[in-house]
Structures are given as C-alpha cells and as structure tokens.
Image (spheres, rainbow, N blue to C red):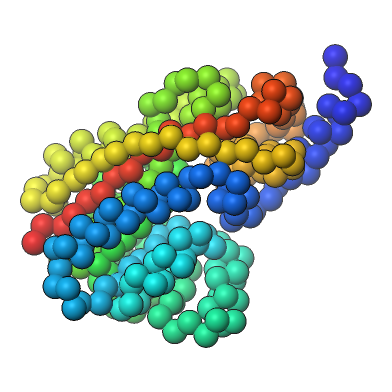
Length: 295
C-alpha cells in the first residue's frame, strides 16, 4: 500500500524521467566515483601511448559520444595537438562551446553527428573524417559509455572502421561500458536486466569483453594489442530526483527504451523500496577495452 510520501516520490520520478542524457550524466559524474575511475584507466592508456611515440610529439584526440565531456580538462591539457569532441546531442555540445568561448580555448573543436552512421564502415568513416573532423587522423579515440546506443552486432565493423580510417598509426582506442556479465542484485547491470527482461524479454548483450574476442579474430586487428580490465564504482545522492535521473540513464530511457507510464511507475516503486528507503548506493561494474594500433 503506497503512502502519501511514496506517491509524491513517484510523481517526482516521472517528472525527471524525460531529462536529457547529458544532464543525467552530469549528476552521475558529480555523485559517483566513476569518472575518476575512467580517468585512471585512460591515463594508463595515455602513458603507454606516450611511451610508444617520440617524446617531443604533440598528440591529438577524438572523444566520440563526448556529451558535455567530464574528461574535458584532462584531455584538453594532455592533447596539445588538438581535441575534437563529437556527439549527436546539440545541447551537450552547446555546454562545451560556452566553456571554450569563455575560457578562450583554441585547441578544442566540436563536431555533431551520429557515430552509428558516420563510422558505419571504412568509406563512411573517411568521409566523416574529411567533412566533420578536419581531415587528420587522431592519436587517441575514446568511446566512453556511448556503445549502448549501437547494436552489439555492429561493433566489430564500427571499431574496425575507426581503427582503419580515423586512428593514426601507433594510436590507441579506449572504450568504457557497464559490464554485461555482472549479476549481483543491486548492481546497475542487474537492475537494467531485471526490467528489460520483464518488459521486453531480453537483457543486455552489449558485452565489451566479448568484443575483445571478436576483435582478436578480426583481420584488421591481426597485429594490434588488445587489453581489458574491470573495476567497481558506486553512486549515491541524497536527492530523489537526481537519484532517479541516473536510474533512467541506466535504464536507457528515453533514448534507448520507451517504457510505458505503468512500467515507469513500477520501476520507480521498485527503486523506492529496494534502493531509496534503505539508502542503498548503486554499484556499477564497468569494463574497459584498450586497442593499441600496430606500429
């Protein structure tokens, strides 16, 4: 039996459900330890990249699905030969554009596009490189939590196109995603699968570690070095709207799935009973995949 407080929380949860993905991600970035975790893994990749290249060479980077880019300061400071932030969401890019203009930053450029279309194969990637990305290849490509919006069956072709047509010789690709293999109750993977299996009959098949096996067998990556690692991060914020905004991000609503109103109410009620009332942080196991291009 729901009480008045529960009904108020449900209404607040429904109101925040339509928030933009970059705003949801901003809450996640501020109240979770996930972005420092991504930065630590990314820095290991950057250190190795520097080790492989001449010490006096300035590097360039492309962040695909950048959003309003929580790693902006790290990437802008590290890649003196230019940083390009690429995203579909014009509002997210507008946030970065304001910062670039306010701080008079000259090394950062912005590009808008759908990575599923622009990099669907080598020919499309070459066209996008010339038309949107300045025509030069990049030493580092990052794909942080954007592959959720691509069918896993398309990943090998997508990553191959980027590797062959956009990544510079001796460059590196760094990818991060929520683990698809985690099944502990209370983790973000478990929460996502619990409702998508119930409502749609299928959970996530977006397994970054499985992509590692696919790439290892792909002819384009015959001489590449492919590395993987996993870690655990936590999220909590003492504000129900912000907590639910991150839950909707994890549930890929509204950009990935369109839950009905009744389904949204069921998700909110579940979160109230199993997470919010017990003050239970969300735990996320995330996988990293790094590909170093053959020299």
